[in-house]
Image (cartoon, rainbow, N blue to C red; front, side, top):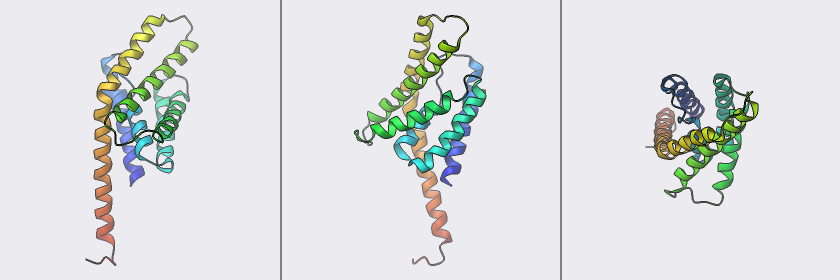
Length: 175
């Protein structure tokens, strides 16, 4: 049930990002899966998160039209970085989650931008890349914590539904 929730959330974010938000054409829109990867890094074990990250990364690589494997590798490195960071930081801290989301969005934006610059046929002006990446980081810092709250509430509701389902199906339950 938990895999279904994570995969459906991942696919929902991919659909929103590629169909609804892509129509606006704003270059400052960041990858919506970055806060989800941070959520998985903070709240989920690797056995629950890695399959979702692999499928989500492959889907984004296929849809993005860029270098295949860039999103997958960024998601996996971001997950590893978040798991490493929470060893030293207090997870319940109010400042930690927005900081992790902002760092994740910045990391992903920089990696994708530099891969586009390296593979471009002509030179890109650095000022254009700086403005796009900084706009994505600002939008990630503003909207990322709200997405994290949605992911946390969704996870809690799935856990409550799973507990009530298991409790209702237990024939040896003592009331």
